Amino acid sequence: MLSEHKMVKPAKHGDCEFCLQLRLMALMEITALAEHNIDLRREVFKTGSQESKDTVELLLRVIKESEDYMLKVLAIKSIGFLARIFRKSNHHQVISLLVSQLENGCGEVVMEALVALEKFSCDENYLCKEHSNKMIEFNAAQILVKLLSDGESELKLQVHGLVLMCCIASKANYCKAVEEARMTTAVRQLLREEGELGTFVSQKPELKELATKALHSLILYYEY
Image (tube, rainbow, N blue to C red; front, top):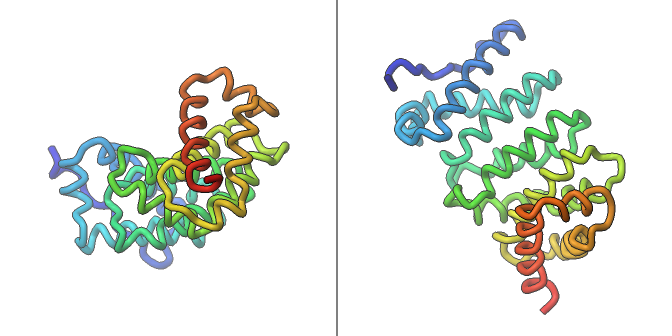
């Protein structure tokens, strides 16, 4: 069965945008399967294989250069599905590009970037600590605090922003950038049920527990 899945090769110069969209859609389907199938992931996305490198380069190029938000969304989703294949040696550019998309003007792009970064920082990713530290290095703390405090941001974006911020806060090492971003204050305000997001968190036990855990980690690092 695994042999039926073929690597989607990078688009050649001059390929039409529609062809690129088809490639990205096919790749997204394969990566979605690979996310939860370790055998498929190892066979199709072998670490160090040229085909795997070419595919990742295609996705990163689309995220960085495309002006079509739909293509960006497809590429970001695939990168998120592949979060477990990235190592400390090759996660630099990936994390940098995803964090940069948190300031994209398109809400759908921001949402998918948040979801993808969650897959890098969640407990199921055994390099979650390294990935979280790298996100902070690329200014994720300041961007997330701004997202949570922005009264004009959609609630669903703020919820995913909170989840990502809590994941980072619970795993990252001490960093001056986190202190300067006032992340501790932002989480504490949410737990006091301030604002629409704070009210939403108070009604979701799993979110409240996540935020409480993050606050304890932040206090340990930044207030003692």
